[in-house]
Image (cartoon, rainbow, N blue to C red; front, side):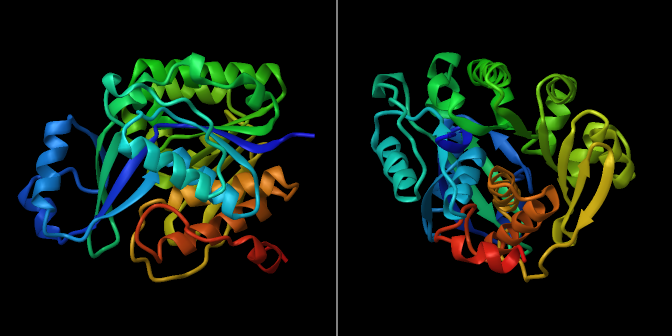
Amino acid sequence: MNKYDVFGVGNALVDTLAFVDDDFIRERKLNRGTMTLVDAETQGRILLDLQHTELTLRSGGSACNTMIGVALSGGSAFYSGKVSGDTNGEFYRQDLIRAGVHFDVHPAPETSGVTGTCVVMTTPDAERTMYTHLGVSITLSPGDIDIDRLKNSKIAYLEGYLWDTEGPRQACLKTMEEAKKNKVLVSATFSDPFCVSRYRNDFHHMAKEHCDILFCNADEARMFADMDDLEKSVHYIGGMVDLAFVTNSDKGAFVIEKKKLRSVSGFPVKALDTNGAGDAFAAGVLFGLSHGYSPDHAARWGNYLASRIVQIPGARLESSLSEMVKQILV
């Protein structure tokens, strides 16, 4: 029997959450609505400007948020990400354990650098702007991937942000190769439109050669397919993988399975903060698939988790929702 439902790999980041107005983003000429990689000095200047704003810390990173969602759905998840032996690294480790995620990764020595951090600024329209200093997360390497735990998992899950640096990229490739060898399903998310624009050719190769399951949102799908029409873009993706899920904001999600396209409606809610909606959707789908639900039922649970996350600040769920599974998936 598999010990873990999902084996996740991603950048381990401590998120600093802040609500700001539109002027804050515009006056500093920040890249609204996307994730931007910066050095510690640039991130420090933003934090200095936020010194009179209420800030909240969370363990984060895209794949990490997804593993937490799997655990809070009632599943089991293992997470691979690199932190330092500093205060933030210990906070990260304890926060994941409290959330029910297995995180038995040895931290890097403090002399190697600091734990990665991400400043997440949310505006009144619920859009999030992220400025990330990767810290020691960029030192994640193939040697950090626990092959024994991977072998004992049902699905491997990887985030597109890993492609931004060479070590994590190689760790990503190693995970996919070992998963295939051991008949573990491989799933991946594009993570961000900018990731697709930077690595479109690489992502095409990844989808064709490695992925069983693919996640993206509507903007990423159009950019990946280089088409304006969303449904045509989804069909394009469906020609590369057996199963893909494409989120479409409050309209729900498309499921394309063996080239057959279906739409799964969402749960209408008033969004406070869209940060983490895609991560929560992936968590719901991965939980559903690893527990024997059909792709459409898995997408419905994903839509439900996404509807819950957009109603609260931050990118991750905070309490168990396992008792809701049977109510939602009737």
